[in-house]
Length: 126
Image 1 (tube, rainbow, N blue to C red):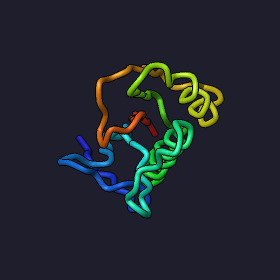
Image 2: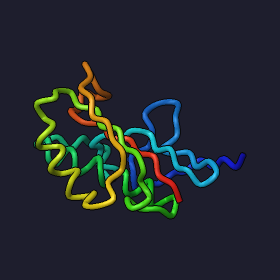
Image 3: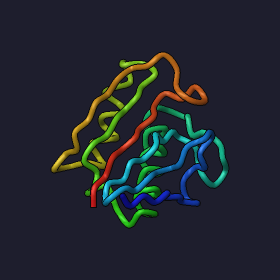
Image 4: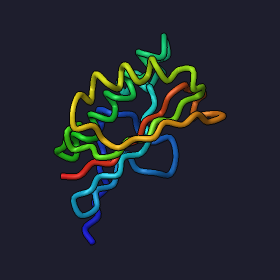
């Protein structure tokens, strides 16, 4: 098994004992990303659309560090603080994935890290 830890300085540093992503035999397992601006370390929570955009930008930076992009994503998981946010998050998400959509689940959870409203993780294959 070939295992490599993937790290991007252009995405938020982990806030716990985990890696931004792990590449194993061509499959990249990305940890969930929330709306932390990696340049400032501050949360981007003006509205749910901007929060989702920042999470997606962070995902793109982790993918880039593994020489991948969103076209390599085969599975996404979206965690919401409230299912009433689904339509707005889905609209932003849809702007990033326009065809050959990855498999996905979206669930509402009681609380997310730093009390954000959305966290997104992906699995990508090269």
